[in-house]
Length: 308
Ligand code: CP
Ligand code: NVA
Figure 1 (cartoon, rainbow, N blue to C red):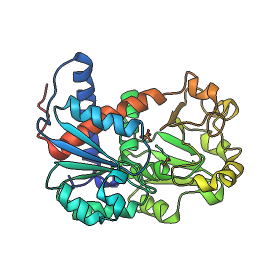
Figure 2: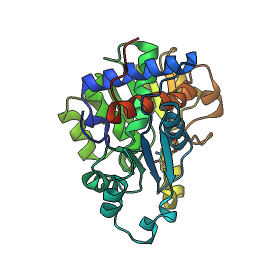
Figure 3: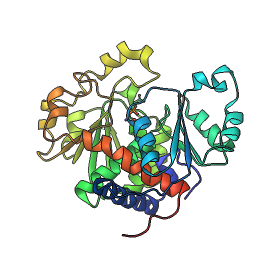
């Protein structure tokens, strides 16, 4: 396993499978009320340049479940906010804690942090990638389907950070990812090329109906990601027609599942009926952030989880 988890492509197919298997075991232990303090005495620093509900709470509760400790750090309250350099902060924090999770505006800053940190760094979302989300989503699908190979996921809407992580995951899972977006909001060629070169099966279209026709999973995310607020009006205009609503869902196979990483803007990328409907598995996805990240943390900074 590499030192850091900055991208889903930082892990191998085998590592992904074993993290998901550990996550399922940790979920079972938690449900049974059985202690699983595999990170006793360990600390995780969590730096959030941007807002968060799920990532913050799941990492913090996860560390507590594992017998460790998490520190929430707002850069505005740190010397980082007064101009201390990322590389200096990274080297100092590594002297205190066992791992760092960072949510940052610029992916380059996450990479710089990892370069200077002597302890593992986890990307908790950047403008480019959101690997922890896709890790939890893969766990969620593996609970439902077992084998993911040849499943078809249709990404509808903005080709953003979460979409990029899905594209990069294709080579690991064998899933086919079709992205339906208007041209200005399609994923960048560099990511599509990287995903394909790694062996991923990736298709890009402008037509949501075509993307969902044979899809097992429909996935969407907010149209205005954190950092894109200035472009709100043009984004809403360009993405109109890319809502997952009952009409689009009706064009997918009847047993297709609907996913959303949350937070959702009902009436924009998804309707109230669909997110609340029987095909939606969004709450399972959100819950699995906790279990999947616990497995990732144990893998990065703990010992092996004993077999049951
Ligand atoms: N999905 C996700 O990462 O949610 P938060 O922004 O609430 O952490
Ligand atoms: N794409 C969204 C995901 C939030 C979890 C954002 O970056 O704001």
